[in-house]
Image 1: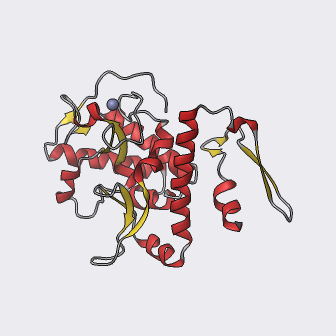
Image 2 (image 1 turned 180 degrees about the horizontal axis):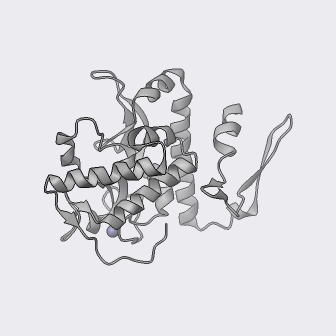
Length: 242
Ligand SMILES: [Zn+2]
C-alpha cells in the first residue's frame, strides 16, 4: 500500500499543466492513511466510470509489474510491445525468453481517447475487439526496414474505429496526415507528463524531451515517405474530444 500512495494515488489527479479541478478522492495522511472518496466519483456517467475503471486497472497492472524486481531490471532495457493475438502488452526480455504479460492494451489507451476514435473522434465501444481497432500510426510493414524501431510499442499505437482503420478509404498501410502526427505527439507527451506507468518506455523509445520526440516523429515520417508509403488524409471528423 505504501507504493500505491507514492506512485498511483499521489499522481492520480495530476495532469500536464497542473492538477485536475475535479477531485475523485482525498488522501488523509498520518498513521492510518485513509482514502476518502468524493461525490464527484458518483457524478460520472456509466461510460465514463467504465473507462475510468478500465484505465485504472491497466495502470495498476503496469505498476505492479514494474515493482517486481525482475521486471524492473527488464524494463530498464526493453519496452513493452503489443501482441496482437492476445491483445496484450508484453515484455519479451531476450530472444527465446518467456514473455511477461503486462496488461491488456485497449484499456491502457482508452482513458486518453475518452471512448472515441483517434482519427475521426467518433464514439467507439472500446471493449469490443471488432469495433475498436488497434492501429499502428506508422504501419507495421515499415518495421522490416527499421530493425531498431519497435512499431508495436505504445508510442505508435492508437485506438481507431473500424472505418478509419480498415474500411473503404480507411488508413490501412498508409501513414496519416501531419495533423494526426501532431495529435500523436500530444498524446505521447500527455502520457509522459501525467506520470503514466509507461512514461519511461515512451521516453526511451522516442526521446526525453518534447523537442526530441517531435524530431523523432518527423524523421519517421520522412523515412516512410521515402519508402513511398501512401499518405492518408483522414475523413470527416466529429468535434475533438481530446
Ligand atoms: Zn474513426
